[in-house]
Image 1 (spheres, rainbow, N blue to C red):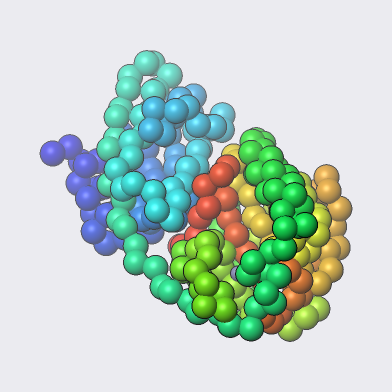
Image 2 (cartoon, rainbow, N blue to C red):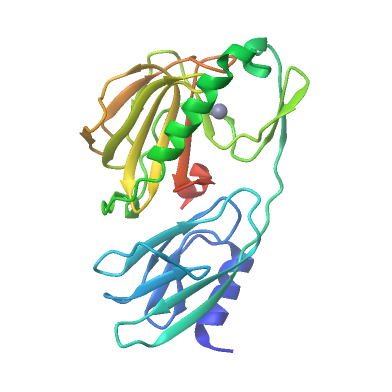
Length: 270
Ligand SMILES: [Zn+2]
């Protein structure tokens, strides 16, 4: 067994979240589990493929990728060094158990939306999908995140949601309970891609942190930045609210790598 295979097995069994030596000159940071964003470093000038698809790499060899809530557990990273040498690294991820969350007292128009809002919801989804496909060369995502609000964790990533007794899509965010008007801070530096009022998520902000990674901040009371604006990590960008499908004021923070929905809590724990 090569040294990097031992390193990978160790990281799988302990889920340490610490940087591991993954191959000659390659390190990975993050938990190898469903919902995780992995940040990596390869030699400068390397090409990186995730499941045989090329992904963005900075000039100094940094890259990110992530897998979703129900993603398969076997993935593959290929590092092609500037001299053409090719390292193929199988990655074994761990699967997760998700909670079931019963939520009652949701306005019925958010559990079963009336037919006249169907077009609006489709339009919202298209817009969100489009901005989340942004690939910029920002590198803010390689820093540790700033928690965007203070308060009790009132909802976690992945939980199966049952609204007023009816099963609906899983929850993909981290909910932080806080009073209306409490500050919402930018988790990392970034550029505002969307600031809009959407049917389910209410007043919503999407910020690009680079390499395909975005934060979505939902159910806001007020938005204090505009589309195209550059924001700094820790800068106040909005106020906590109770807009859209909610039963009380909270911030719902989501992280995407392109269209993959990832768990913010795994990054806070790092
Ligand atoms: Zn939520």
